[in-house]
Length: 66
Image (tube, rainbow, N blue to C red; front, top):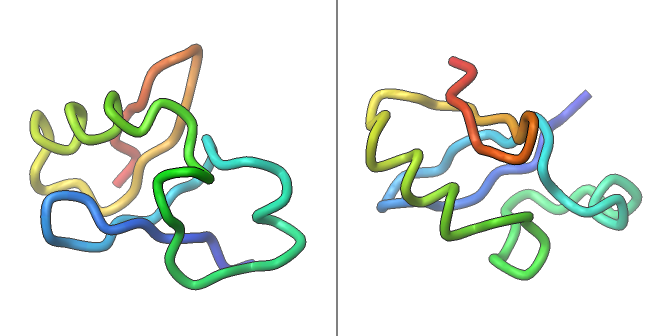
């Protein structure tokens, strides 16, 4: 199963959750900000964890997954 990606802070990261259900049907390669929940919080989490390559939206916040 391919997971969608988004570009954050100049690099592409994988989103394991936290994207809208419409995205699952269309399977785009790279998402835009409109399809992601709490995109500002994702950017903050990416700044705090610059080595992370995947993020998941768990309990209302973005957490690094890998």
